Image (cartoon, rainbow, N blue to C red):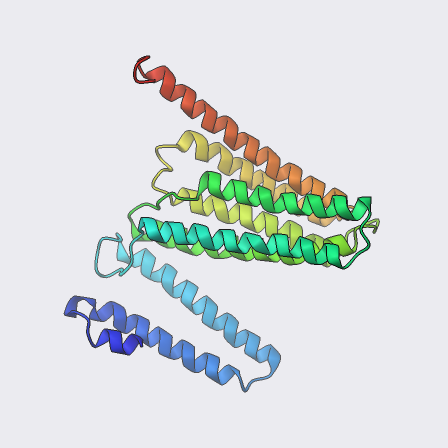
Length: 277
């Protein structure tokens, strides 16, 4: 299909489509060959393909300059930004699915239901932080920022999906004195990765300079929150307490953001005449 499109391209686009076609051919061959490999080796091939695409995209972004040039071959549009937001909403549904699956595996009592509720709020916290900072906002019109904006969504969505997977084990072990290490690290690590990745995303936004008074302090809050989340995962408290502590981390970050947004509005009102306000 990509070859048939390339045959109809104008000359100035031949380099871009040719580069992409070569990548698709290599990927198709590698994935096809991996079907005949042992399980462990197959996973290594898939990882190599994924890293190849991510690394290649980052490399192109570094050398292309701006997204306006033909040599880059991609630019952010409102439709693209909306689709990234919609995809994030879909992935956030994994948190809900994970909580529902976990509740379906245990006898419902106060501790299990409280753990499930707190686990669900973790998903809400990631949802609010993403759309308060990143959702519906355009990246800067340079290839490096666009590439960072695009690629940083990968660990964000990966982390959200991983958090959803951790919800099942969290609720299943709701009555344990300590959260199992695999569940604790998966959930706390996912929250930390999501927060750190969102820092990269917000720094690539076109609004970052205009709203530095919002994004700079919240970026610091997210970095501190990621460190606290790692500490929580290392301590491995009871499942309900682990979830509660992660909810507290996300709540503080969200409150910092709300405070900064309100300060921006106050500044705008003070700088305007009564009629303009």
